[in-house]
Length: 278
Image (cartoon, rainbow, N blue to C red; front, side, top):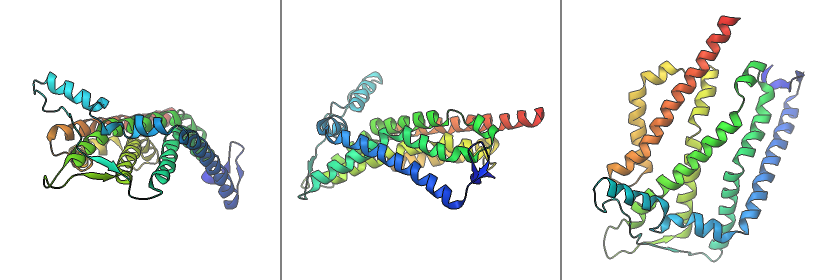
């Protein structure tokens, strides 16, 4: 049963055959990531200047939107970010070349995410029953959309707020901020990728509900607790101490939690409908 079924013909596979199948799925995924990474490697200016280092400049889209919001709320230029007083430096001989390779790989993985998710799904799908496969249609599309939504949220919201606070924070005017390039790049890539994973919460809730480990009643009962956790997470991933920045991060996370409740409700109702019709 389950993982020991091969496709729809239900022919049994041994443990080693499963490992061999998994190996080929992983190999194809790695090849896809590497191909995209190699292509991105030759577009250095696009990857670094137009994307990776863009949040370092005051004309970044998020900073301009914050300034417009500040004006709309009659707060003057309270939310406007006109300067990011720090410079990036490289302290290692091979630092820039190594970082170029690393960034190309991370960007390649992000862009290849839909294909990687598809390969994972192709490995998991034969283990599901016909009804489970039916209800899981579109899971790759939804997972990809949520992942990219999280990546964009991390890049346009969390990253600029973090860079603005951490890059401009000073314990004394005598200390100038000279940020190591690898520290800056690590912050941007980690936050962006982690946000993409966090936005997969509805998909995780979907499968947890499928196997009976989560229910919409449970999520509603502990909604207040979840709200507190969301606020804590927003405070942690948003180093800026002002409430406005933290709410900008917390609000989408809360909407994500509410969406997960509806996803769980959908699974439960489908299961009840199946039981009543059988």
